[in-house]
Image 1 (tube, rainbow, N blue to C red):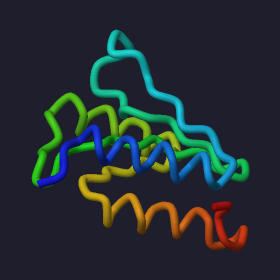
Image 2 (cartoon, helix red, strand yellow; image 1 turned 180 degrees about the horizontal axis):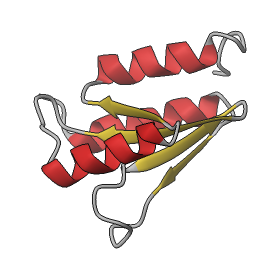
Image 3 (cartoon, rainbow, N blue to C red; image 1 turned 180 degrees about the vertical axis):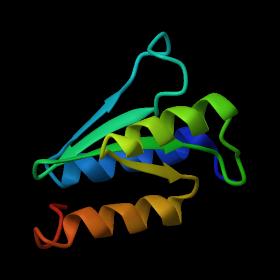
Length: 99
């Protein structure tokens, strides 16, 4: 099983390769707010990271719903494959990420 920190590291490195921003919200931020805010090519994503099989807490479900109602793009990534899919999606209009 992949630890959440490994998933987080893969997301951060991948976003940096796309020349994007991957900021971590401080733990004292509003309860339920996703772990990361990612900006790539002017697109903003709120990313919740979970270990494989990890479940959202009720406060997270509520916060994500509130963000989505406001038009935000909220994602939950719980595996290296999910991170890879997300990075492929956001990078597809820019060509290959830098190596």
